[in-house]
Length: 481
Figure 1: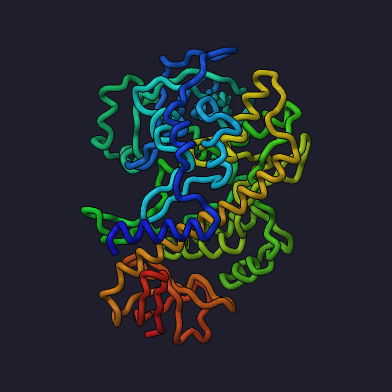
Figure 2: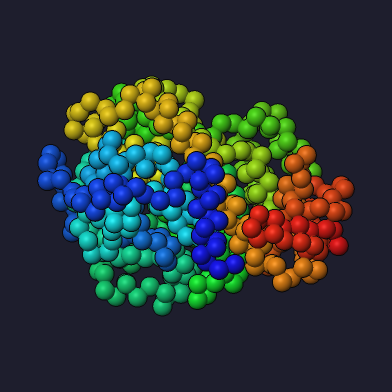
């Protein structure tokens, strides 16, 4: 399937799901003329600090930077700077309308459909290396046990000293001294990475003691050569991805608590306790483990840790089963003082997406609330506004995920069209009245088991034969070999 055909399929899939695949002429014109307003109020100058970013190799929409300072007694001052996208996107304008309609960037095998025009998301509002940028800073004091002792938020001007990548940072942290050439040109960067790695570990360990789930799912990443799809490979977690995730969780939690302390409503990311805890109990029982009768994240994480040690090779599949049973998160509006709006999987009680305003509309909404609080202004959104925004963002996030899966399946079907009749090792990833689905490892794709599905259950290892594909529909059919 040529890239143009895959792109057209993605465009049609977006339209079908109620997503806008292109910006209006008005939005593009507005973005092209958008400039940061004159700096007013309390905006600190933090350009001299050793800020850096870590992201994917090909990422151009950089949302956050960080810097850390080791203080007395092992306390770490951790600063996370988030791109001030609100400074460039006028509420109620054409760009804002597009972002509010889609609510998220859509990452497909045919390319990225950004939430904001690229003149903003990959240029003016991106925290590029060597570029001065406005940001909202979350400034935290982290104790040696991983507890965030205090946090404050403020606006600042920052400067990215080094754009680093997950793979290279992970290799360097694991002992590959040649992986990071920037260490020679950026004074203090090596110490920054060491302190970051240590404080991220402390933050993670505290959350895990509270029951944050230690899962390791695997997703497929399309691999292109000369513009053509050649493989689907695992996009696996690594040490640097975990590091950034831990910092962002801390910043998001601190932001939610800041808004609550200011007496403002907010958008929260919410994952309730599993309604079908009995299914998780039954799964654990199959491994000889008895879980408590009521949802218990600490007990569940202890089970997962034991299984990871006992069967490292099968842990990704077990993680996938647990994640599916937990269900997906949602956005909810939180009134001032609201409780019981935590995130079961992360084991945090206050959580607001705030660190990716170039890519997610909820983060832009949260940023506007924070800036209003800092300026003493009237909140730009009332509680009723946030209720509707939360509902729409949850819906569009689900639609975006469906588009991404549909295009990925179409790409995978095209990749396999010359391999009909071949056999593969597979894992059952879904078994319900809607169908039985299996995943093969090379290439990493999922399809439906259309024959020989009797008795197949989630987690079973099977040998399957590819019987048919339909790239246009994204259908991949297997039978038990």
